[in-house]
Image (tube, rainbow, N blue to C red):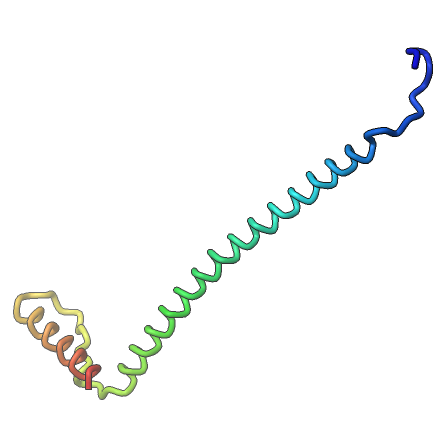
Length: 100
């Protein structure tokens, strides 16, 4: 083959096509792996949010089942020692009511 003759042979052209196809498939597979990782993180976050919502709902149902007096609301007074003790007892009553 001389330098002024055009190249008409396609030797090795299939290998180049194969390499290009493998690179394209590798990029696509890496994108899928990244999507699975992001989906796993989102699933874990949604699971924690769902657990928190269920616990909050359970606590709200406990409050809804109680009468008004044992809840122990703050009446807007300044906290002195006696008021703090009274609230501590109210919280203790709430905890005892939840265990029964």
